[in-house]
Image 1 (tube, rainbow, N blue to C red):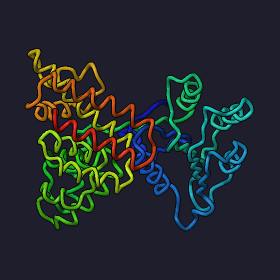
Image 2 (cartoon, one colour; image 1 turned 60 degrees about the vertical axis):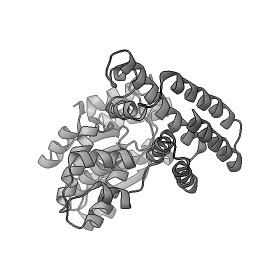
Image 3 (spheres, rainbow, N blue to C red; image 1 turned 90 degrees about the horizontal axis):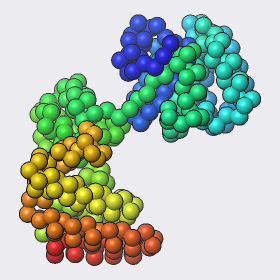
Length: 344
C-alpha cells in the first residue's frame, strides 16, 4: 500500500476494507484519536473487547509483546485489533528493528495493528524515520494528520453548529478560531459550550465572547490591541487573566513580540506600495494571512520608526525576562514594557 490521506482512510472505514497495518502521525491530535476510535468501533464487538482489543503503551512495550497480541485469534469477531500508543519506532535497536520488519511484512489477515503516534513526533526527512515510513508504506498505510487549514476548520465549525441545531456564519467561525486557537479538541469543546449557550439560535460574537475561553495567544493579542489604543487599564486586565491561568511569561512576551512583528511587516509592505499580505510568502504565514491584514489595521496610527522603537523595547525586555524566573519579577518586566509601549 502507501500513504493515504484522511479521505482515503474514511473510504476504507466506510467500505470496511481495512489495512492490516497503520501508522498514524502528524500535528492534529484530535483526528488521530478520532480515527483510532472509528476503526476500533467498526471492528471490535464491545462484548468481546477484552479479548479482541489490545491497547499497548509503546514506550514500555517490546516487539515480542506486540507480535504476541497480533497472533492471537479473534474471539467471535473478524479481527484482533492492537493499538500501540507512542512507540518511538525511530529509536529501536537493531534487534527490535528486525522484529518490526518481520512482524509488519507477515501480518495475520485477522489482525489490525495501529501505531498511534500521539506525542511522538515523526519527521519523514529524518534519516531514522525515513526507513520506518518506507516500511509502513510498503506493508500498510501511513496517514499524516497535518493541521487543518482555516478554511477547513471554518467548514467543520459551521457544519458542527448545524448538527447541534444552531447556525454559525463563516465569519463568526473565523472569529471563534481567532479567540480559542486552531486546536481541534479545544475548538469543538468550545463549540459545544457556545451552542448550548446560544440554545438553537444564530450564534453571534456576543455568545462567543460570553462563554468561550480565550487562548493565551488570543488574550495576548487583545492585550496588544489595548496598548495600541492607549487603554492601559484594559491591558492590565488581560495580563491578570494570563497570570491567573499560569501562562508562561516567555509565551506572553513571545506572542506580544509576534504581534508587533506582524504590524511592522504589514506596515513596511504597505509603505512600499504593496498589500498587507504581500510578505506572507516570505515568512511563515501559511493559512494565517489574516494576521497581517489585522496587523495592518492595528498599526495604522504608528509609523515605521515607532514600530522599530517598540520592537527594540520588546527585544530588551525579552532578554531581561530570560534571566529572571520569579513570577513577581517577570510580571514587573512585562508591566514596564506595557507602559513603555503605550508611551511610544
